[in-house]
Image (cartoon, rainbow, N blue to C red; front, side, top):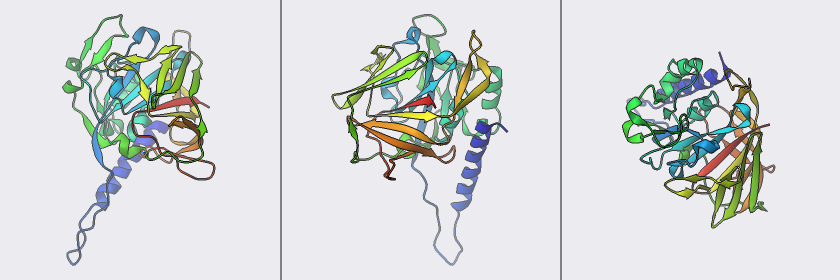
Length: 308
């Protein structure tokens, strides 16, 4: 079984164990229950972010934005919406295997994407993935999608009101938020480089202002995008066998289960940390070399997955 499918299977097993644990006690004692993680609506949308796809729409409402490495050294985004669902989101692009473990931590989210290569489409529509993901691709829910201005394939947009929205642990449950800890280093500007994309995060007016390829990264409804917390997370990768670009480059699958080095940016400071995620249904924690957990600042979170 592929590593990603094994991870999703673990989600199902964990759900079954939780259901078994939340049972009544004996008739001679009080009812026994296991505490559960607060849940809510969760929608994950794959977003195109190359130059031809900008500006974005709806990203100002995202709770978490994952930056994923792609074939050819470019990036795409997996945007997680829970607190607020905007009227329109896009441009929407295709799914990759990296998305599987991103989705797994949110229970049974809705996944909106433009499509995928046949092998990934089959995996998403077959157990165990189809048991823990509500597929909401353009092929699954065509009435939810429309073309906007610009040239295809960079002009496809989705309307969440026309989707069935799944539920699960929300971003506020999956990640840990809290007051800024001691021990940070002052940081006002933090560049992040991919082979064919460059991000820059500048601390201004209480947020990290986001630029992409040297210009402000904007969303039509909110202006320049900003984050309360930025996580630069180094991850192991291996090649996805199904997808390659016209030059023969393959997509690197980012492994977000495990452990590795990261940097957390919040409150104008940087914190070198170790990230840890024991299994696919768990969120990721960030700890200093001294073992102190670094919570995230309240607000939007950006997670940049950087091949180690």
